[in-house]
Length: 50
Image (tube, rainbow, N blue to C red):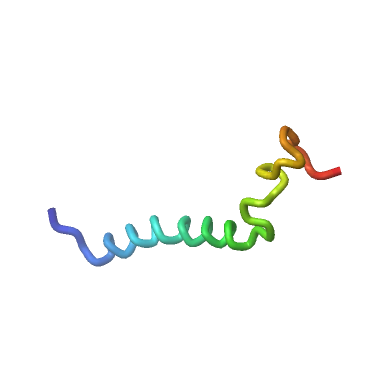
């Protein structure tokens, strides 16, 4: 099956843009996996810290 350069570029953008967005969100979280959802001190709490 023959693909054009345009199709190849669109495919890369279709995969690359959401990936870059999600990696950026993960990096921008200040705590990473140490947020209140994962910590032992506030197990069961799904809302914001009081």
